[in-house]
Length: 127
Image (cartoon, rainbow, N blue to C red; front, side, top):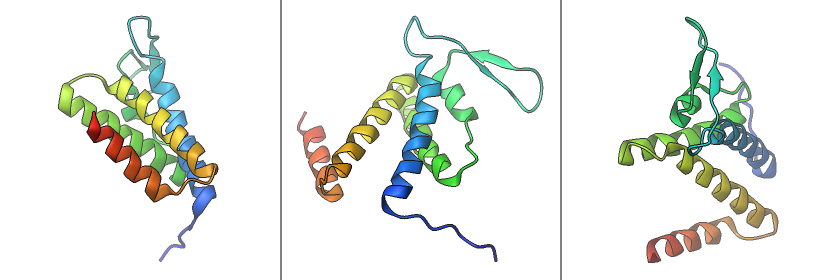
């Protein structure tokens, strides 16, 4: 049985936030008509040049497990946007990054995480 690394509270949030930001920053350069290309180094074959945000997101795997959890969460957001609309993955990724960053700022300022979550849901469904 291998030992497990257990991380709590702010330490866990910081690492997961790093993962969110790493993935989102790599993807958001592809946004819009003036978005830039990204070169992906594939294990097999030559490098691939793409401007597709979801392709960039799919290729990102981070070494740190908690950072990778943050990246996987945003990857799931992009995947769900792709499944629901067939597009908008980069926009969904950028929005997810902003929501996570602003939410964690509120938590760091002392806001109760549960209240933040419930208020966000209420405001979302009122529109």
